Length: 292
Image 1 (tube, rainbow, N blue to C red):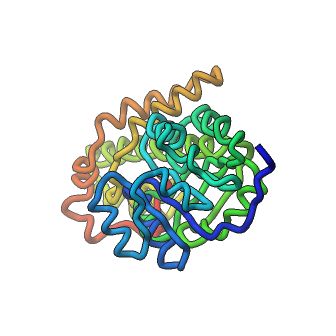
Image 2: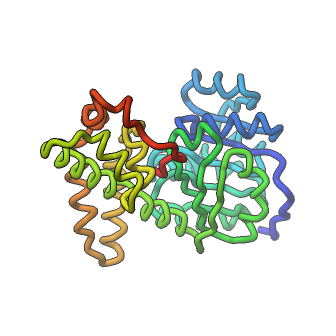
């Protein structure tokens, strides 16, 4: 294929209007970026259109209309299907387009998409999201990117409306490595904090009082400050991905295995119960969005 001609992106397509994708679409459309959206759920499509996005009848139609395509779907299998199937992004993508894999997947999945994209003149970046749902809703996503630095610089203008920070971590797959490290820190910390506060409660000190004290010391963190606001949705997938990647690197991860077991015994209701009857007097200190 002839060398693709790259120009400043004028249009963005977003596949997957879940808890992270829908807010991003809204920020892009409100920033007067031509924003095409696709999701099999018609209800969320209507919500995106109400924010100013343009509905696409199919993923192929979206890809054909977009200089940059953001893929925000749940799993490795979903990413491969959305990007590489006969009705997916790559067969219809414009030469010179850039695909950002914003899902939490393995580096191998990113490399597989990139291998199929290269002959078509399409760049691929892995661009993992941290900041959680509240970060997405406030336009304060922290983006961890792997891939060609020039391609990243080219698409930065269409990242600005829905992100707070963008970190280029290295070659393709590095963004997913960064997300995995983030997730290990987050879930390991959360499981340790819950265990510690349960012990404090059992020994007679209310967790709300303990948290207020801990937030003034070296144990302070966003996880501690905002733990009762978390949905605890993805710990199984996050920790399974981390352990699978660690196996590939030949590294034992005893803390990750412990966190995986511990998180099976922590629910949103458990955390709410820790702070019942007293949390109103010793609530969380002001903090930014938790990275998750």
